[in-house]
Image (cartoon, one colour):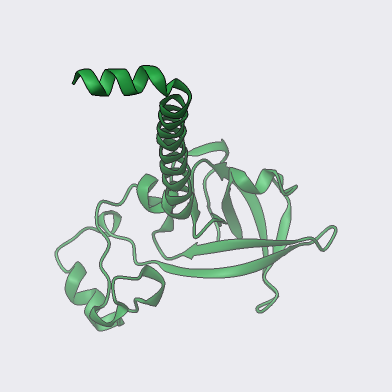
Length: 178
């Protein structure tokens, strides 16, 4: 032990640099862990903040939500005995919607289904969906210039949707939920 202390006193600069490198490496690990947690939350905040407790995926989906497809007969068999408000069959799809006024394109994740109002997180601004052409969007889309009463068009179906509300922390695959 005596020789070790003597070595440390003689080579203060060398061991000081080693200590600084260890501290910087620890700081780097903390920063990267925080970044990874933030990206993970942004990738699936819709799943984490939804009101639903369980998701049912098909066997061939390989535990990937976008690959899952359940037939109508299987859905009826699974939901037998449940009230309609207790389950919500969902269709989740990545899409690009176009703002009607200026033609600006917005990448979104479309979450649709008959009971979708049971699934979306709490609305922070505006109102809930009442018709098939009304949508609630994630607050991220405010940064892209989307406001309440804006009309967004699906380029494939040419259907126009009216933004009636905003919800917080509802993104999937790094895009805002619609």
